[in-house]
Length: 190
Image (cartoon, rainbow, N blue to C red; front, top):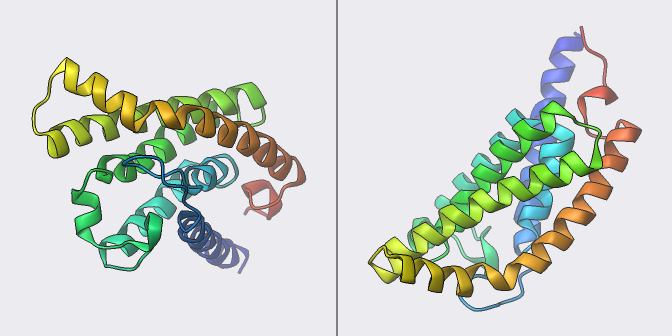
């Protein structure tokens, strides 16, 4: 009975994190081709408190909702066309944040510096994937000059806001983990 309750809890908490991610995408500040949103903030928290597997599942569910046409991407957009557009690589890069950050956090879960480094590393991989996507599919020619130009347009304006999100997410996640809220320590295991 406890095992079944744990599985139901996992499903519910993963779905809840997906829902929060959808809501966080509605808070968008347009800055050039890619808006500043709070999805990454939610992904950071999911990685820290849910673990890698549930965080990745949460992001996959979010992406599937968007692909199915629900307006869960920034600026109330949805559909496969959004992923095929200029920001598609950054949106798909959310998977890299969840996977890489989650795996790094797993090594030393309750260390703030380690948590921040995990978020930063995952975000760097998202930046790389998104910028490559932008250059290949939006500009049409992969070159160092095009990559540098796309990086300056699509990444540089977001570094400071993303670092702020990482710092706040580290503080919030650490607090949630210490209190046993949302994480595996908050329920019994068999």
